[in-house]
Image 1 (tube, rainbow, N blue to C red):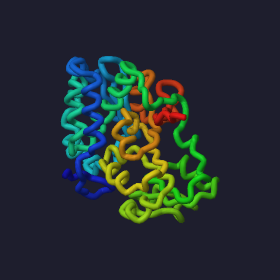
Image 2: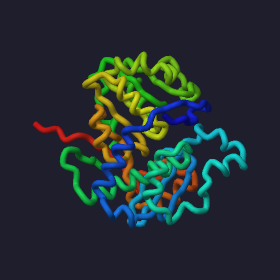
Image 3: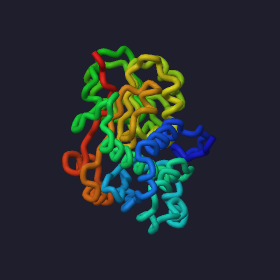
Length: 291
């Protein structure tokens, strides 16, 4: 069990089995070459953080600003990332270990590194039992009218807009109600009410931030068998095997195409609007349907 900050509170959580299995799979796929790979560059941005590996591959992760109450105080924030100034040149093995850290900033770069290494794995061995569709948004492929009840974990605005336009019956589970506006508030429920709504959802759309704060495994355990489960966001851009094993039907992530250019953009507070189609692409990672 670990203790982390989430929404300004300290929460106790169990180890993230999704990350643990993904780490083992990456180590098996890359093998001894993993010992030679370093992180050439690491950047914390306002919205996203990212890394560039010595292999040239890049990876992103959401920046968990709200999970860092220390950030309001300069001396305290210095403690939040004790390796500032010494991030470049570290082994990816050290970054992988950081994905298990209680420190949210270390965990952020650790997950970004796992995403970058996943891209390397796909280049080494093309997936057989799943496909990676580049340049498309995972939720764009979903017909909301096919589902009786939908639950969205996180204020995923584009998804909420589609649900509203489709007249769907949906709930939005969110730590901070201020993230929702207007009609969206009528569908709001606190994140702590997940056990009340998630088990009944036919369509479950989950922010990739739940990978970062280690709450995704618990949500997947609650989910109805056979539900459509989509995990969306830059954090969800890694090998999908552990996710598919637990009912996830698709990951909607990001693949980095020009690592240095992307890191420059996020270091200046850039978001997806600034880099999609230029230095990164949306991706859908989904199971191959055998007919």
